[in-house]
Amino acid sequence: MGVLTENKKAYYKYEILERFEAGISLIGQEVKSLRTQGINLAGSFVVIKNGEIFWIGAKIPPYQPKNVSNYNPDRSRKLLLKKEEIKYLIGKVKQKGLTLIPLKVYTKKGKIKLEFAIVKGKREIDKRDLIIKRETEREIDRELKLRGGS
Image 1 (tube, rainbow, N blue to C red):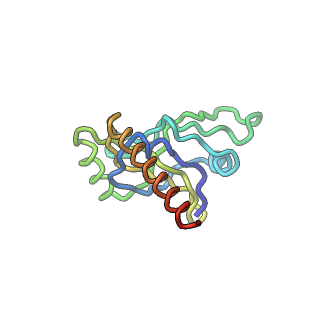
Image 2: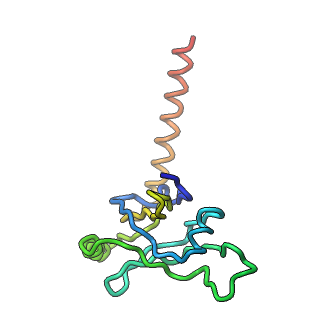
Image 3: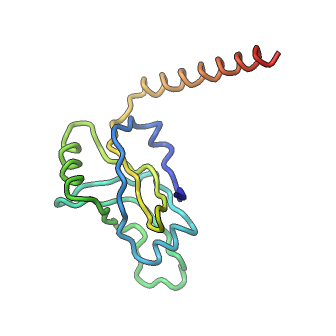
């Protein structure tokens, strides 16, 4: 499984509650472009419209910019999920404070997949607590290595 791109800021900004894997409805040149040039997931999100799930805000550059006539890099792309999963997601997103955010784009058995998650936004206090916890763990590890090595 080769990861093409990952949304690392999502792990910092949001509390990830549940992950999902979906296929993406792409045209041929988008597949080639994703594999060669990649994509930036920042600013993109997943929405539910009329019982279908769409990935919005992802800008996939054209594979060969000079040969493209009517290609729209900002178009919404349909995500392919089972009906039960879609119904479950509709129920979850209706809850206050929950949203769908893409985490990474990767290949699996030759197909391009999108991993997205149901997330809840973190408050600034939570982010600071996370940073403090991480720094203390680093210092503890550093002290243990110094004492264990001498």
